[in-house]
Length: 360
Image (cartoon, rainbow, N blue to C red; front, side, top):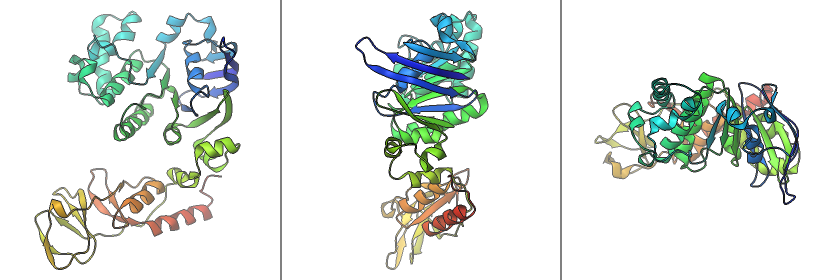
């Protein structure tokens, strides 16, 4: 558990970065600090491991005042992941990950064995251990950064905008990887971001900071969306917060059959036809055309996002992003099982509201 008790940080020029912060991060949860630039979220994070010391107030980690602990000792017990990984360029990936265990007194063999295990845990082939950071992609470097932070098995993990420097596809993969890791490792994680969608996806509780270092609201994602504390929170969460609420709703949506074809076949297209590969994975759509045609790559129309049976938001997004207005449903192998329609998602939402399942 991490506790902020009336914590204030005032810099020498008089700027108040954090103003009387009272907040408790429960053990074994992901708490996200979110807000615009200059709102104090990163300063609050860095006071936990004494990269910055508070001007007044108390920060407790597992009941112990951080100011009573020697900073290097404190930091060896707290994992820290920053933007662009912050890896040592002159060390191999394996030695980067082994850094903290070695500083903690582990022998080199044990530290390197632990590092190799962690590379697999974060989804990297152990062969990457021989490479240097410059030989890795941005997403791979961030995975190494997470592995390094976990190397000494710290109970607390601080993450300062760790995924903001990678492209959207890699970012989503890293977010999913973090959620998977947390389900296995059960760490106490404080995660800083300026992206409200990332905050709502990752956070079990979300702290919204506003300019001047004030905590505007600290709540579960569903509460932020349904009952923002003030105009600032409502504006920051966004006008489409009703749509975002669908992220937290799981409901049965009818799955309809769909006409499929494969590349190289000659077919008569009378309606939207989904083209699949030999493993029944979607490749794209054929629109209504006159007469018989040969199915080719050149005729395909991009199919939009896919629905994996998770949330109403992903179902609606799949239907709305599809050129056919039919959201493609796939199983855990990526194979097509049918399609969903936007109208059915709206009906499922209405049913959830009637049943009182929509967050209040």
